[in-house]
Length: 204
Length: 255
Image 1: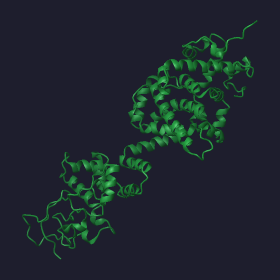
Image 2: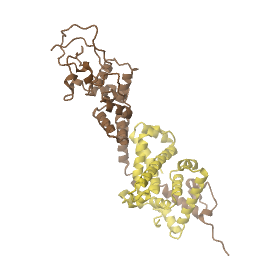
Image 3: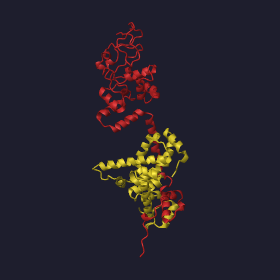
Image 4: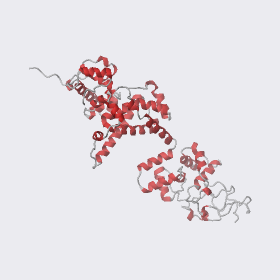
């Protein structure tokens, strides 16, 4: 993942002042992380939720104060709240046939970008993580992809740091078992390591 | 009798495994960790072109956000429209929208009911019941012999065209007659979206006499201001000077 590193404060300040180039840098460094997190949690609703998240972030950009990890955590919190609101709204609609966001994702036709993403190893890896129980999948994504430490993850998901450590550990062990299971050979894993399109041989 | 190998969940707990695999994937201790290191690499791969396809859309949205940020009244109005559904509120919002700068609401020139709604929703001043509620109940405003001021400006009235008070405030501002510490100045600045925008906003506030089709006969004096008033200047105006008007009445119009 691209990180702005030491340049983050200056980029944030410029974006807060309305500089579109600075905002583009912020977006390019954080959007892929956000969209991957949302794809695991919300499936094809990810793009819509990401759009809402960025709109809210744009409006409140000058209120954010923190480092790059903090900024990503901030985006995640906005996205998480919006996803939760959507889920509650869907659950309140009696006529809804798909009150769950993931169910909604299943009936949504994939667009060209999704199809292209499907051909990458990243998409397969995301789908593999999505097979975990929801809380585990989220915590694995926050630790591994967003790059938050245990304390930050605990704050976001409302669990204790110890509970986060255990859940992430369990989730990763499950993933390791699946990766090394009979459906995927060590050779296939090795190929994905060198060629990039990881885990394509595994139907998750 | 052989025992089954421990399940994944029974593996020794390693609180530093994630950090170790993220920072040094080559240091995987066993096959499980090696598989996870590969998984991590796929999950954290650089941005894919497909993930950045919509950059232009987001930049356009960012530009739009910046425009709204520098124009707070429409922002407030949009939020209001989105959040509130009552018909009266929407009507008030629409009226504020028609006024363009929101000056009508902020100068208190809306009809009382809508002014109250605007007061609660957008923070415009409440109806001031100490003043004449409308032009029909104000003998001075309906007097067709209303006095043009010395500058030729029709007397600012608390009338229904929604422009007079704003025009009056702007005239006072332009002529330096509005102290920056006054309530009216703050209202004007608020309506304009900032003190630095007052000049720009006031430039767009039309002269009350130029609003064709909306001015009533009672809004305008019947006579033309003459270059040379025929009457003597009065030392004591008969009417109470309005806060919003700029000049003292000095002469009666000639018919």
